[in-house]
Length: 332
Image 1 (cartoon, rainbow, N blue to C red):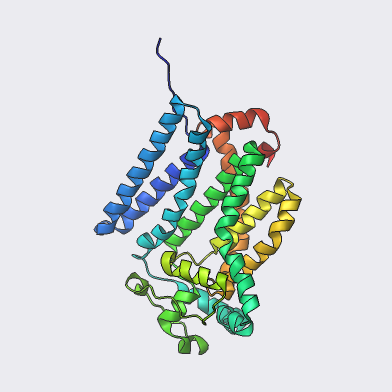
Image 2 (spheres, rainbow, N blue to C red; image 1 turned 60 degrees about the vertical axis):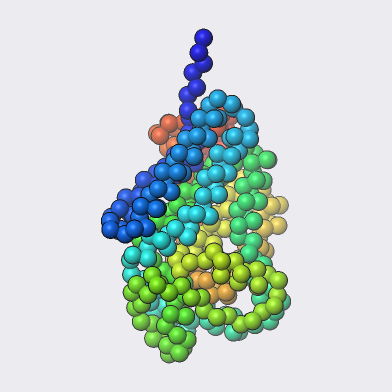
């Protein structure tokens, strides 16, 4: 008697498939004759194949390590999807001049330049850089917390965060912005101080130099600068996903009534938000847009998740359990 192994995809895997389809179409449209497009599309084939293999193995052996690996895999892919936004959007003109001009019209100066000059103290710099560096530990730590404490809520939490990341990355591809640390370097501080913000067009396609910052020997300051030198790209300024995702996580923590955890993370969250402007990674406009989109993506992500778990796209194994045993998350 043969055993039937039916493959069921988790909601986050289906979401990843949709992102792959959308970005593949964008790549084909933007880069029909660009050699990099073939490489980008091949990576997508490998990702789909890996997800299929994990889902197939899980259908044979329903081990927790395989189920966990399926979530971990689509989460780790964010490390690739982020810099890839630059590989795609470098074929479009840059729009930093619009953000810098808007910033200048609102404040009369550039807060990203003035903030660090106003507060150069080492202890203050370390405090904010620590908050900025805590971004990825915040995501990983809260994900593991809910995975261990509340498996039913974890799937919703993870889906909503991943959905928001994909929304941000799609915006970054279609609206290329590099942020002050790249744009100021491109046009020169003399023009910045004069309130002149020229359109740099496709400048960042060939130039990826960061603005030279004040020498700070602090541990976290050096960690952030070293990380940026290695993994940063002139992309993803507007809206700030650092602000958006961290704000979304705080919303989701509060929604699950984890008030002690919320209180513990609140100082880190506030320093993270402030640090995005302090280290010149973002304009204030990016921060405001990050806060607004965090709320918008929370509601939109919750809606999309309900559609997924109500068999709009089919039901995953965890979703089936989730629907049977959870009432709170379904009513979000």
